[in-house]
Every structure is written in C-alpha cells, then in structure tokens.
Image (tube, rainbow, N blue to C red; front, side, top):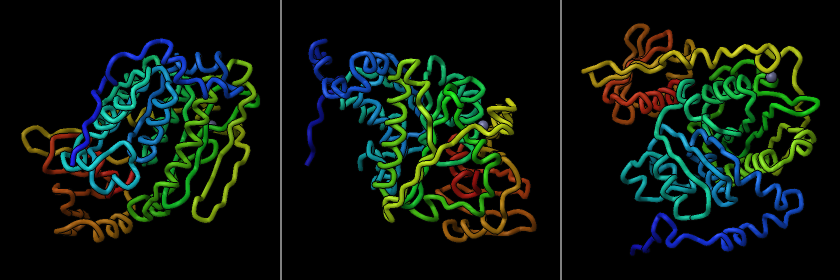
Length: 361
Ligand SMILES: [Zn+2]
C-alpha cells in the first residue's frame, strides 16, 4: 500500500498568523520568548553529515524553525541505515539516493519556514569554506574523527561555534565549542590534542549503534544549538559549555566543566594543521581508469585494517606490503603509507567514504 504524500512545498503557503501560532509553545518557554525565537529564526546552521545524528539534528532544526539549514553529506542511503537514520525510508535505500537529497525531501514534508539547502559532496577544507558562507553555527553529524578535527580547526580559525557529537553502541559524547564566554570553553583539541590511534577506537562498524543513543546525543546537540543561537549577548556570556557523556543502556550520565587549556595548539596556539591538510586534495580521480586515489592522514594500523578487511571484504590478497580486497563492489589496493587506489568508481566522495569505513580516518 502506498500512502499519498502531501506536496513537497507543504501545500498552500501558511499565513503569517499560522506561522506565528506554529511556534507558540516554543515562545512560551521563558528562556526563549519572542526575542529568542526571533534570533533563532534569523540564524543559519551548517550540518555536516546527514546520517544517524545528522538526520535527528536536521529534523530538530526544521521542526523548531531555524532560519536556514545547509546540509552536506557524501554518502547514499543503505538498508543498514534505516534502524536509526530517521529521515530515510525503504525507497531511499532501494534507490541508493544521496543522503543529503533524501533528507531534503523528507524535511520538505514537515513544512515550516526553514530554508533547506542540500549538498551531496565530501566535505574537505575548501568545501567547508564554501558551505559556511553566512553560517552562524556548525553541527557535527559526522561519523569520523578526520571530519571532526577538520571542523574544529575550521570553526576555531573563523571564531564560529560548533557542536561536537559522537555516538557508538549505546553511549555518546557531546561538546559545544563556543568562541565566546568567560572563562572560555574548550575546543576539541583542548580535550583530545591529537586524534586517538585508530586501533583503540570503537566504531559503529565494530560495536554497532542503537537509535536511543543517537536520539539522546542529537537532543543535547540541538538544545545547545538552540540556546546559543537564540541567546542575547548577555545570555551567551553565561553559557558554560560542558563535556557531556551518556550511556542510554547503563543509564550513566556525566557532565563536566570543560575549560580552555592554556597549551592548546588550536584555540590558543592558532595552528590549524587539519585544515591545511584537508585543503590539499585527498582524493584524486585517475582519468580514464575508473579509479580514485585516496590519501589517508598517515600510516594506517595494518593489523586493525587486516582484521576489518577479513571480516567484511572478499578476495583479500596480501602482496608484500600491499593489501588488496573487494568490498561494496569496489577493488581496493592499500599501500603502507596509507595511500589507496579505489577501482570501480570515479566519485571521490564515495571512494573517500569507503576508505574511511575500512581503512580508518
Ligand atoms: Zn583548544
């Protein structure tokens, strides 16, 4: 059975009175009130990654009526996304629709005043600069550390607010990184100066992930975004961001003060190596060969990559220092320095995504 969908435009334009009434309960929330709602409705948010966290975040932004929402995601919808990526449906997975576009379509059916722009692309340093034009805050809906260290460098370099969110299994972390505030709060590198070694990390591929954990992390990020963007200058000055950690399974919750670290290379030292690295093309299409070359951030952990590949890939061949395998319809050749040739595509975003999934980022 098919259910008829209302037209994407939401039908006849809602009148101004309807729109004012739409947000009545939000405006009755005293810390927001009319003035806060007005600031919120004139705000622009960039959401990087529109999968699990990103889908929940996008829905919150549109439901609450932020002014403008820019979506960016490099992936397509797959069946394994559907248990927790709330904007996607069976048909999106069947047709492998780019996530940014499927999300835009689902968000349009909610209606409301938010202007939603969608970009199906890999977010590198150059793309981030374009996407962040006129943006007041960046939301992290990504699933990998390379993107988060890039966003942290970019946001701190521009003195833009961003809100980190990460989720694996039943637990997650949230950190609002805000450019103002006295005393100043931490950036990602105040807490984790370097990306942790990949072999120590759980990922959604190895540890799985459940929807309530995603919802909880996205809710804390969305609340921080609403509070920051709706706040007056005085209200922002009193916003002391905390590092929040939660586990929806064990029911453990922790929120700790996260002050700026005096020796932070990023927000104090003003060094942005992840932004500089990302401005070099990390994925290059090799013309006429149906192949993309991807460079990693460094030497991959060979033992970990071999374990992941043995679990997920076919036709695994170890030829001296090279590792070859077939996965997701692509043939990957991995070199010891982290460079990989990805045969079977000319889409740098897809190649980069597959690289990050199996080799790590
Ligand atoms: Zn810092």
